[in-house]
Image (cartoon, rainbow over all chains, first blue to last red; front, side, top):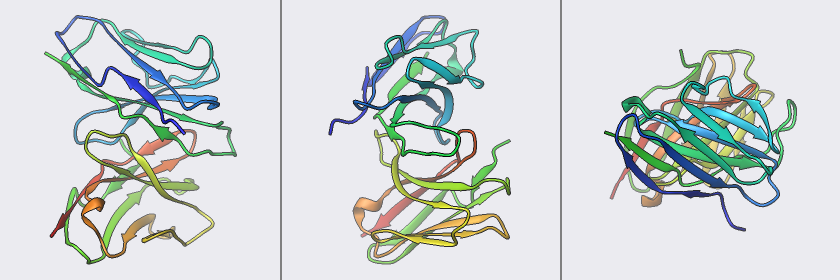
Length: 117
Length: 109
């Protein structure tokens, strides 16, 4: 079974530039997550999709970050404009379905390492 | 602040010995906990989970212990191998998954 795919694996940009990350979840997984992992810390949830709808984006800095999952499969995360503190690994994860009672394992992709200079 | 934390940022263990990684949580309402392993350049990988109605759960070479009285859980890895070198995170799930800061486990040959 293919895992969660992410691209690019690495990206270096200057502050105030824009950047986009792409994620292809495991086939059949309804729930997709974007996490930000700053060096030395655990991943922090940015946004959660159920199919193509947003379930939780409470920790997404909406003035500069946006994400979409138009057809309920692939997803993109965009940062515009980037700041120095956005340097981190951006992880995508997917799971079969997540409800309030049912929890299915989240499978993580390898991440995109972003460096903002 | 974070509701999930780890006691030690680094742990070095001799190959073949057992490893114990500890984690504290603050929310007594947390009902589900997961341990993840993250190797360099990879995303976190599920190791084992435990629900709050359990005290112990065993997997292959791993055991998770949950002490709800002191809000503490631990991950025990038996007979550690070089492939166990990684950062280990505990995470709790309420509305969403909340990760701790991680413990880097280094295996000494």
